[in-house]
Image 1 (spheres, rainbow, N blue to C red):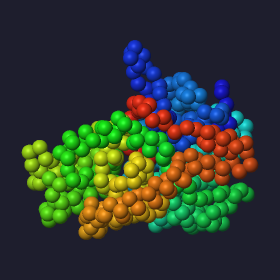
Image 2 (image 1 turned 180 degrees about the vertical axis):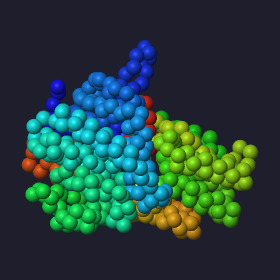
Image 3 (image 1 turned 90 degrees about the vertical axis):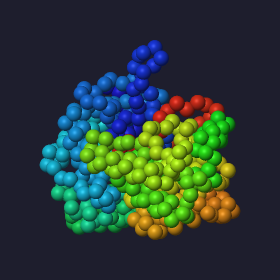
Length: 496
């Protein structure tokens, strides 16, 4: 069995199976924030990625992808239903996002969550060489660090949470709160998106487990577990190079023409999720149309809402509500050939997404709660001419970094309308000043800086850090003009 000095463990493997022109099934690397962050390092280090390949039944034997070993973990239909759709996405996800929807609690979901976390831990323990670094990703695998430490105390274990971590009064609702906290404390370093999340975690550890805790260090079982904020980012150079391609610029011009050459285009790109504030955004836009502050002939809204977790009942209901509201708005305010809202649910490849970013005069990113929101960062990176206004929710993790955006409270309908009007009518000089500042920040704080920062903190004295710095500094951006056939993934990096 192959062993690795670096093991990444995430819910999904960073690959998809597709059909080659000759009809054969082939596996290829998928895009995504986490893949982009780690790919330069993984290519220069004996590395293994542990995760689910999709589908149910026995785990497939997979080829290496770009020099990275793939270790698939099998899931049964019951695992998928009770672990992924159940405990992960119907218990933890709503709770971690301010209980926008009521979390559900079922004992069989918790049993599946334990079972799947142990299966992932066993796979990671099998492929990690002595003293290896294991980096565990996200809320699907809270228990894994503790399980892995019991199996392999020689390992250096990191855990990173891509979604928000809730305040104590919400987390305390979980029937299995102590077990989840202890699972995370199996790590040597626990990373969060925001400083407040690390503070919430420290408070809970002190309250629930009666352990000595500060916002930086926690004492447990004779060890010190470090915690901190490591805001995730994007491959800024790759998105900028893609947006600057002549074919993408030409496509942006055609899109504007297809939209009827409006004076202003508003764009929103979301997964279909109740945390994204889609319904609130549609209501605000509808009221602006009704009041005459926005006119269909001058302004058009493009709403991309890619379906997700379609087997979860809450998501099915949400999609029905959104589509009903889009139909109502178009029926009331649209004209023949001039819909008020262009509503799209299909996924876009990254070149098409970059063209949409270039078309948008205003990018409306207004989630009710988000760990980070990489779409906002992609929009900023794509605005290579320093134009474009970003309307951003105060409750997205991105707001702590992109403070020059037009910040709004998406729960405040009047404030949301005022923010949208401010972004639509802002002076070009003000828009450009804000965009330049945000682009400068992203240039300094890109995806490679995030990976380097986290792994340097995790492996302070090990040789992994030097390989990381060398690999990420040497890695080139995507070559302008190179075709991009990968599907855009509008989700948090670990594929939740």
